[in-house]
Length: 477
Image (cartoon, rainbow, N blue to C red):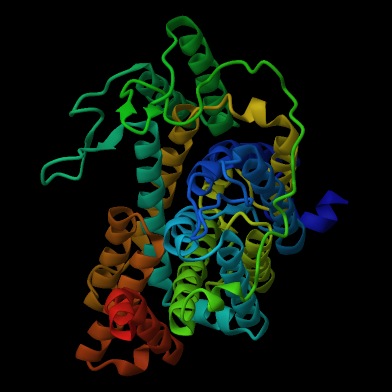
């Protein structure tokens, strides 16, 4: 049954590899269950209410809905799209919803805009527009997108582990550790986990990423038990530079917690138009739309290349179904009151473990569903134990740089901008937009307008609106 549904052998995989890949993907993105409530839960809307309608933050409410929706959508991606891709609340998008939208209206109104954006993307998929844009992108720019995302995901791993940190002062934005030094036991856990995975990969050990994450977690629990390090974030005005990044690794007092799903359905589809002007609401939807649209294009492209699932025409199998599930994820996220859900580049960690089919996504999804009850157990895994896998995946995706023609400036310069701007701006869409716009400009300067697909011209124009959204907002008042 599994073979017929997922074509495991046809894609050169095994059930064991898919299960390991699914588990690794879950471990590398399980942080969203804890992080999404921290981003959404402490922001008051325009009426002074927290998400869920209360006068005080309700983080368990958000965590339960986050895990539930991620689980259902990831399983749907596995069964319908047969692609090793997991979905959850989009980072960056949730911050924009919290600070850029909810503060202007009620939380329900803000989530209504997210639903509206998801419905528009769904229409674009059903009409074939999203797939057509996907095909209009030159193949070598797709390689650049994969490489850029590899650099981006490696930076995420290094920052989340505390290996790279913000300086806070002066002209240099980031630095090694705290004040230029690696301090604290959590960094030791990260380095040991990274070196262990590298050693296992060199030895061609099956399950290298999974073994590394589990081993680093066990080590972290032992260290925390012995030295009582505590979290990095102590209070709004106090930080422990030697502390753990998110979860403090300790054996939980209980394994099972009863989830509360009452947040589901907390949205008002068109309520925002009574709180702000129609033009302002449309611009907010457009910003969500563009980011969601191209983050997914980049993620699917990168995962497809890493899993070696791209056909001769540069297409991903079941691309239409994959994009449809992703577009419905935006609708589901808004309708559930937890912000837009989208495809996660952390899925590449599962692909690095050998995942090639949707069975891995089903495994990841089941883990998320269990998390609604087993959230205390998930909280055991610290950033420092999971992030070495992201650094390794960044390396694996970086290898595609060899397929880019660096002698053609019409490809090389856009590829360069795509690759560097993703990590430097901490935004996948910015890198893609810069690559598209520069490619169009250079091809026109070269007199090779026919080499630019008409749809790419349209997308380039939309990205210019996106880049100039701030002055446009000022202009429209």
